[in-house]
Figure 1 (cartoon, one colour):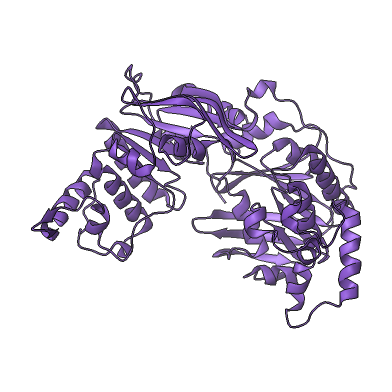
Figure 2 (cartoon, one colour; figure 1 turned 180 degrees about the vertical axis):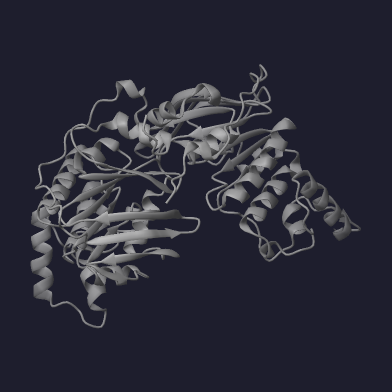
Amino acid sequence: MTAATPETRTAAPPRPDPPTAPVVAMEGITVEFPGVKALDGVDFRLFPGEVHALMGENGAGKSTLIKALTGVNPVAAGSIAVAGVETRFNGPADARERGISTVYQEVNLCGNLTVAENIMLGSEPRRLGGLDWRAMRREAARHLERMGLGIDPASSLDSHSLAIQQLVAISRAMVVEAQVLILDEPTSSLDAGEVEQLFAVMRRLRDEGVAILFVSHFLDQIYEISDRITVLRNGRLVEERATADLPQRELVSLMIAGKSGADIGEARPRGERAARDPQAAPLLRAVGLGRKGSVEPFDLDLYPGEVVGLAGLLGSGRTELARLLSGADRADAGAIQFGGETTRLRTPRAALAHKIAYTSEDRKGEGVVGDLTVRENIVLGLQAARGWMRPLPRGNVDRIVAEYIKALGVRPADPEALLRNLSGGNQQKVLLARWLATAPRLLLLDEPTRGIDIGAKTEIMNLVSELAAQGMSVVFISAELEEVLRLSDRIAVMRDRHKVAEIDGGDDVGVPQLIDLIASGGQTQ
């Protein structure tokens, strides 16, 4: 398979310095939620006639900054000025009236209405007390022409591709003659041709003087379309710089560590485990496995007693790869061999039948059940595999639950405690206990240490190492590259939905080397 590289796209040429006056100036923005400071004194500037990329990993504060600007989140401190006038919006409608429009990743339009009705929604021309349908179609056609779209305004929106629907959403956003257009992950579900179509529209609007705030996790796209980049990390401003002056390696380093790559310390060495027998057969072999719009076809072998780390930025395809291996998503290309036999993992239950267990990065949404007890959460996987018409014997349940509460050090050690009352670290331990109780041969862990304290992180990472030493095959995903390096025997590097490299772990590999691979798309420096 030919890996994608940063050279696949043409980098945007350097543009002149922006005008002196920004159209949006946010200074010292602080946003607080109960128990957490989501933004801490952040400054942000957006100039007319530029595409400004907002970059950062999960929890960096990108969405919070956008919501602060558009009035969704109240600001605890700081000031916001639009076109030189200090202001505060009471919501998106308020911001829209002042010329700030937002288009989100999920197209928020009405598929059962016509293109014209969607574009003019809320701005419909009227005549004699009713809607002027002819004027509506005429106005919609004018806005479509501005986008370079030659589609029928009277056609139903759901008859068009997702890319066209995105452009219709932008057309609707521009009905109010927006000065600022916010595009939040608009390319996440588009193919290469559709992305180019969107970029052509963005360039046209930029050249008309519109300021565009662009959020994307695809590095190649950022460097192709953006003029300026702001990097956030942990709710704080790390850097604002012209795209042409910010090398990709340095951008990755700023997002991950908030400091230059030269300052990043080497990771601690991984735990000692027996070397893999070179004659051993893989437990699982993925050949050309992929899913359109999710992750490009990849090859990967997973061996018993080995931890394979997945390294890459958010949106690189780490989670999508794990979901294909777990049956959470269904592959539309390639094949999986498990234990030497070709199999199809169409559902998580099918994967569980093969002793493959998966813990999602969305612990609350797809993992633990807060309103159930610790006991009920731990046995959930076993009961699902057995079938709901065949309840587990109470004695077996008590023994299993007591065993894993003790083994994983769940606190409080009360099987009847409601899970929602436990700390994040203990919730994660209960989730691990659920899948370990199924005696998996392959364990897929997606961000198992996110949002938990240092002590709980250490316990979970030590447990992963112990499980591998006992012969379990483990896939470990973490945004913290130090954790990936500490645990992994091998590391698959992901970028822009492609597996771009695979390296052996060890003391001679550190964070700087991983950053180089991510930034270069797998090209050796």
